[in-house]
Image 1 (cartoon, rainbow, N blue to C red):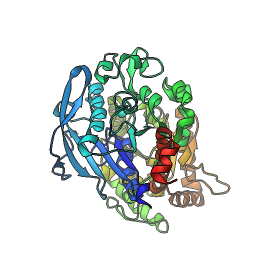
Image 2 (image 1 turned 135 degrees about the horizontal axis):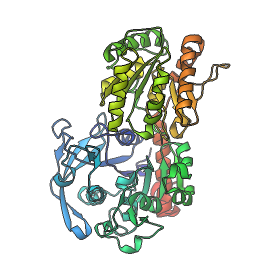
Image 3 (image 1 turned 120 degrees about the horizontal axis):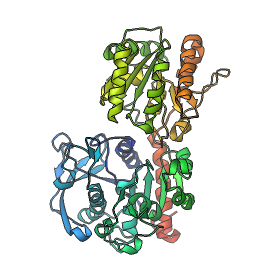
Image 4 (image 1 turned 30 degrees about the horizontal axis):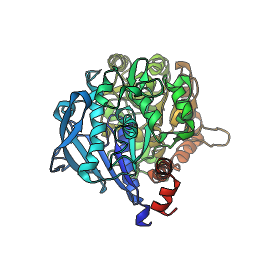
Length: 505
């Protein structure tokens, strides 16, 4: 690769694994930059230094100087900047330290309630990331923003930072990880943004007489993408667009879908340090048997090889289908099956599934909370992995399940539909079991299909495992697609002549 072909990329997000993570967004920001760097690009990541991000654990180094952030009517605010690295790479990560906004136990909320100043917190993150370029003497070719938390960045680049000598000519890419969360706030936030009330209109930042940060990002971004091709289609409909479907449709020509990848250095049964016995596709039967026994013991279930064990690792919220699991679980447990559930979320679910554990102690086990080790054990030890999402922009657990030879049971939506091929009992093709209606009955029927396969179709079960383990979703492939988007965005922002002169293409 020629030096002139190297891109300068500023990636700004509210979370990045392993430092701070609540979902798939953190996984993407923690992985994608490493693979872009391997392509030769200069990638810098900016996230907050939340209270939970240990300076000592990650060897963070305080940069000299104080970052000054203009916050409109609030005035100028200040923050320190720490520098670290994404583990296993040389990718620089910059952590913004501002005790008032980020010195808290939670990323977005506490005790189930979103922080009342989330508007100012993430406008601060967005503006500080752009101001940081001056401190670093960094001129990004493209600024990659993620979800509503940094959705205002494209609007800032088109307005108050348009003539900034560091970022004024930067292209922008906005990745939509979840359209349900949009960053809706009171109109007075316009005074903090400081870009002028003329942008508070139905085409840009206004929706239902509120500032909608995601809408402003969709309108202003040079290009848009989502984390699966199917979700890119779905968000143009009323069912999945959450009131912004018309805005997305207007930008449909600038929207694409790129499926997330899997870090197989972390999620592979051949090298997983958390599971009872490592295995490959050749040793999957014995390996999974040992891991199933270990999972049953860990969760306090009877050790039985003669029944199918279904596993879930998920947030307990409606989006993930927790409601239809709750509706179907009593009928599911009338079958000769076992069920393991790991996760936390809405309080009602904690109590409800705790009661199910008490009612069916030999069939159902639940762990409220998140355990990285237990998540790996479920992927390896379960016979089937259940993901009945109402919608799923991408999803990663179904990809992990395929790698572990654990056929996923999924609702055919978003990335679940894109990444899982439905089982064909005649041709022994496919690697998972799909259902289409988001109902408890459809979930029950599909789990029944899986149980039948376990008891009566050993060749089919072996084919499901084999087909799944042969499939790969690599970040290398995804990074190449993002690189292509970045280059297209630069051409859109700067023009074809500039791009030819800069990159010789």
